Length: 64
Image (cartoon, rainbow, N blue to C red; front, side):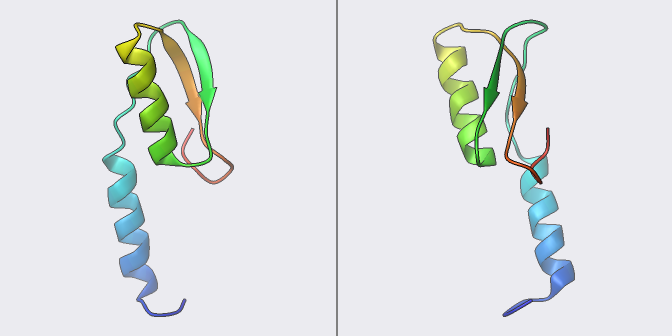
């Protein structure tokens, strides 16, 4: 990997994944996005409009 220690990069990514703020309902719509940030933004927008969302998915490789 260029410009960085692999272990530091992995630790940084894992730390960012722990900071993800997505609240899910027991029932609701399924949302999908290409990035974790987009999932968070969609989740927040749905919450503001009181639209329940049950499941979220990112592109392959992102946490389900």
